[in-house]
Length: 418
Image (cartoon, rainbow, N blue to C red; front, side, top):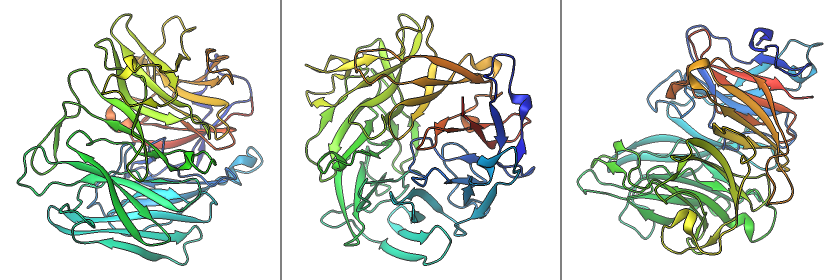
């Protein structure tokens, strides 16, 4: 690790401290996509990865590893200058990690899939590296279907009771035009799997279980639908989205109760492709870009009854522009703490390295963000392989981001005791 006071400037709050968590000079490292459930609930440990980028990793890269980052010492800075990074996986093809809600174990997949062959292996391991075991191997068609998964999404998501895990994948056979993608839900206790939704438009699903502790809400999964996407017969994406853009939905993890989020799809507002739950609430948050006026906004909403793919025009929808008080909002990626009180986000202008802001989320679902505090310029190139992707520890006291300042992607931490 390395303390990086040079990333602070005259506009940064006093007392802020930035720590570069990874320091290898030949191999890039990064945080996992900011919606991933990769923190222990006590905010002391998280998973990051080496030989990777903010959108995943190469499934055949033998250098790729998930690492446990132990922050207990690092959070005692400046008294301590230690931060422990310990490999937790060694298998080539390790992907889609999720830490169990109790913080005791890591679930992940090993991707050995090919079109119509290979296997997708679900594993778990205690966070001290012991008791590694295989939960399930998928090496044939999914139960009750003719579909065999390949190209698994690099993110999985785990239910708040720790009983179910979901991941999406390509379901094509290499011959079918406009082959489907689908969402698989694993019952971790029964070691069983069910395909709960499928279709050609689900190529970039971003599945996210609700973190609510409510017995019914904990079955909800936030999913993204990429309309007018184009994929070849092998599942290679040549156009991620088109037309009026993506829309966002919520589905129950048994495939029922499909709902809309009132964002985008009106020809002026477009979902950028990142959304998340606001803490443990049933409120969700997205970033949208608008043509008129030109802006990138943060919009919260609750799921409403499905009524075609009408986005912002969903009848009786409840939505709130959290960024409406900002003269020129330009926000892209973001995350909240587990209580849904704090928000961290990156912002443009991109050509100058961007910025990271900390905001306070109002309890009232009709109010804007209480305030937006500038933290620092991460000096990122903003290339896709170096997206900043800021997120918070569950307790909201620590922020994390990526930057390729210096030419090589690295993972960073910022202490937020301000």
